[in-house]
Image 1 (tube, rainbow, N blue to C red):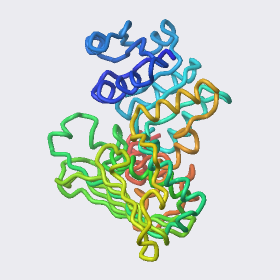
Image 2 (cartoon, helix red, strand yellow):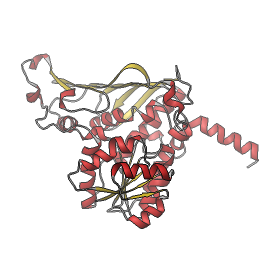
Image 3 (cartoon, rainbow, N blue to C red):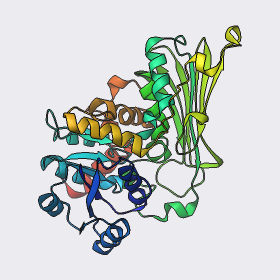
Image 4 (tube, rainbow, N blue to C red):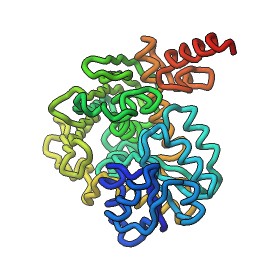
Amino acid sequence: MRVAIVGAGNIAGGCHMPAVHAQNGEATVIAVVDVDQERAKAFAAQWDIPAAHDDLRQMLREERPDLVIVCTPPVAHREAVTACLDAGVWVWCEKPPTLSVAEYDVIGAHEREGGPYVSYVLQHRFGSAARALREHIRTGSLGAPLVGVCHTLWYRDDAYFDVPWRGKWETEGGGPTMGHGIHQMDLMLALMGEWTEVRAAMGRLARKVETEDVSMAMVRFANGAMVSMVNSLLSPRETSYLRFDFPEATVELSHLYGYDNSHWKWTPAPHRAEATAGELGAPLDDEASSHAAQLRVLLRSLRTGQRPEASGNDGRRVLAFIAALYESAMTGRPVTPDMITQDNPFYHSMNGPLRAAQDNADKEETGV
């Protein structure tokens, strides 16, 4: 598969190039695009990529890739993704997918049956332990899920936000809820299924940003489970922690930016005290969560023309949930999935009424 990279920043070199190289020759990067031509050339030289461009549409015409990986800041996702889809090229786009649910739906209208499709980087779903747990929840082998914890406790200092697009609603879409906790929340939602209600709060406690630097939520799921969520960029001892309590066992994941089977703990309930992790359902194969693991699944879908995981409604779920979390935090009301509709300000922007108020002020000023 002929692959092109759009955006020659840290995520492209640190995660996506190694992911392509891990595909055992089934994919190769043939071009890189960046608005900074010199940065594109330097990236191409570093990774031995044949072509460097500063214009995406020109690259699409000249290089004719099968797959484009979009590694730009979030504000540029929509333009890059739609250009690729309109050219008949599949896309794999970094998180967060878009700045709003509305923008996500606009992009989806550029897809066609059988492809091209766009999938989003939500790689924590693709480790073997998460796959095994999802099957246990589907079959009920551990009993119905009861209680859950989903914590993204990370640390980013003031200097992190010196990058102009960070910490701003218009360019990043939100704070740690949108740009950091999205990975753990997507994994929780992918495992637990449909959510039915969220009650949330958020604050800007320590960082000089427009968005929040902490959010907390209580979530109800259709299967009856209740889950607590915390997203923080103020936590010096960083951890990503998920916990699932079932009648038969507690299953826990403690990691930071990725996991393998060693990061999971399977604890039997007292009435099964002698059961081993294997007897509870821990997997024998050990596939780590990674960009490489998700890319392998995506390439399989590309070859067969099937919609990939983390695409369409499957990729939209976490974005709609985040919109609901922000709405609950800003209004103080519980929010349900059916409320995230086109007549809701939070459908159009994660800072909902703040954006609507600004739009109204602009209209009054211009007389439009």
